[in-house]
Image (cartoon, rainbow, N blue to C red; front, side, top):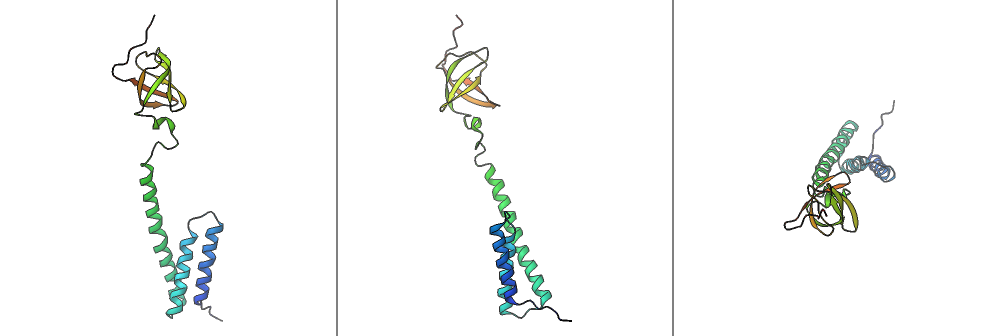
Length: 157
């Protein structure tokens, strides 16, 4: 029986094939195994290593290249989530901003202008059109606002 002896070019070809697979397939795994294959092939080209040791070397290199990178990427992604938690949550980005009442707030509800958009607003007191308020909270599609100091209450004539 003939025993298969992997050569350096086998490992390099396997590594390149895995790297190409990474480009073709929607995955983030094959590149690291491809790098391990190419590195294993380069080591086998320089040092005479038996087939079992070659497989072990490939496995260790794949582990060393894949898992630390994945762990680091996961930590970086987790850190980025806190950077701008208002992204794609437009109402949240308005918190703390001073806006203008464009529809009088009566019986707790009215409307304010945020940028170029009209938002439903709620406040604990009635306010006239033109009053300046600060956005303090977002409840669904309604902004909870509070009047700025010195803002007159709405007339109930």
